[in-house]
Amino acid sequence: MPASDPTSDREHNKATARVLRVLSAFVGNTEDFGVTELNQRLGMTKNMVHRALTTLVEQGYLVRKAATGRYELGFRILELQNFNQAEPDFRTLASPFMRQIYELTGESVSLAVRAQDFSVFIDAVETRKLGAWRTRIGALRPLHATTSGRVLLASLQDDDINAYAERRSPMRLSRPDGVMKAPDLWRAVHAIRQRGYEIARRGVNPVMAAVAFPIEDSEGGLHGVIAVGGPEDRFDPDSNAIMPPLRALVDELRARTKLYASETAGQ
Image 1: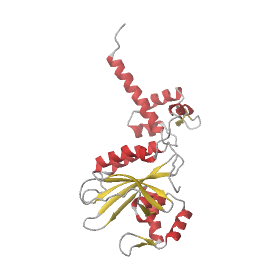
Image 2 (image 1 turned 90 degrees about the vertical axis):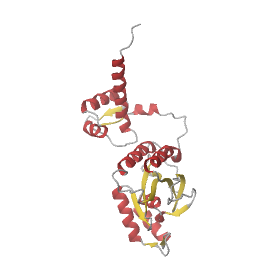
Image 3 (image 1 turned 60 degrees about the vertical axis):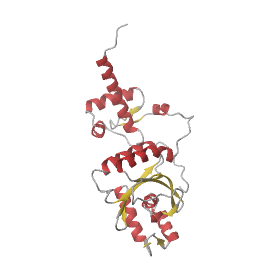
Image 4 (image 1 turned 180 degrees about the horizontal axis):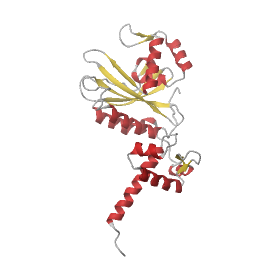
């Protein structure tokens, strides 16, 4: 029996990897894609992208829209899901990414969900460095009073936010005599919606900084929020060295959580 050609095997493996990369770009996304978008998103040549798309269409994993020439997931993608396996919960999905965010930043990472008018921490990876926030698992905080809580609040309908502000008035904060007024809350909500995440700073000597990201589910709602923070002299959310890799990790987590519906209390 003739030996296989190592060069041919390597090229075949590379081609398979490219097909899987293209397919992965569609997973967790509801929109369709064109060749140019995938070329820019994946850093592959248009020729490579087109060959991978052709393979996926031929196998039924993607469908090409005749009217636009764009591509979307096909029904055969359902064959890849094990319907006998229980869906992973939010904590399970987020756990490896929390560890990676901790390794990237060296600061404490937390996971929070909404429970009616409150945010509740359900998991954390804490740094051993001095001056860090400590997360109390199971602790309830009003939505307006924490970075993660405001992100959860910003995901609600406007009428629900107004109703919350009325129910919680006066919206007290943790600092002495601190009260958040409705206009302040709405400024925070609009900023979160525009930016896509929340950046917060508070305190003096040291100033504490945090960034919190909404993590979406398959139905357009939220599973919850993942946040990381610490003293600003160690963790600067505006740093170009931190945010791009941090957002890449969050986007990778979202690609997984968007496959599952949320079972979070209060939503």
